[in-house]
Image 1: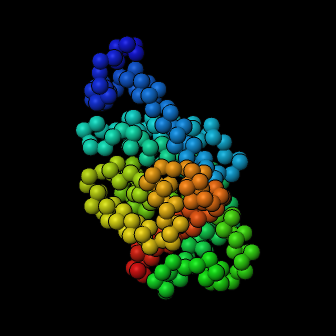
Image 2 (image 1 turned 180 degrees about the vertical axis):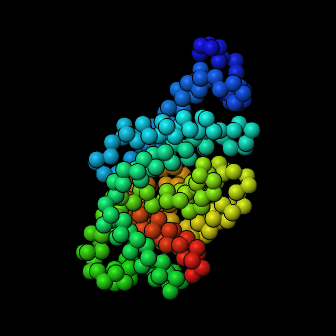
Image 3 (image 1 turned 90 degrees about the vertical axis):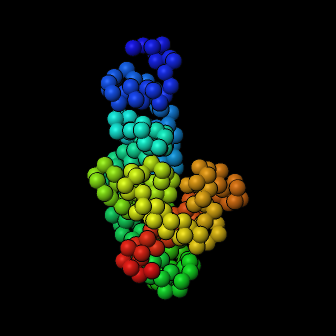
Length: 262
């Protein structure tokens, strides 16, 4: 089946045909068609990554995610393949990043400390904790706290992708997936995951104004950090810092919910 043999078939028809035959020529056609999607997702992940993380490596990992998506996609379900594939591509990239454990253990510990401080303070005050309050709770002066946040921001990309709900091994769902692509979820899990999504939406509404705008623009409007900086008239690095703080707040509140604190 050459490329010309695929002409005349709609994508829906090709998916059904692939499900029936597993024809490698159809698979290769889908790989070529969606290769740009892998680069797009890798580009999104690469933002804010340290220099030792190579873009080409992210693309390679993402390609495995695309292959996984092609093999597991069910065209009879409501979700579009692109939505489903983005989840699998991103997941493959983050699985590899976790496996290589590129975030220093000391930074992981600092991230947990800040998250715990935010959770405790916001449960106590019933509002968003300020930087000064978080620093005070951690017994840090302003300079030390800002240094800690810069370290966390540089490696915080995984925070949104930590698994919140995990059913079957093939159906792990991260906070990020819950925000970005709820329609890609299995129907039987929609009720519980919709509830998680509603909780996240409520938490986002309670974020400080700039943090809320950044989360919405980045995760819902698909703007880059640079584009958000232009919209909000702040630097890209400041956008990255505020995004990290917002994610720490979301994680802290979800942790409190899970513990029954809030």
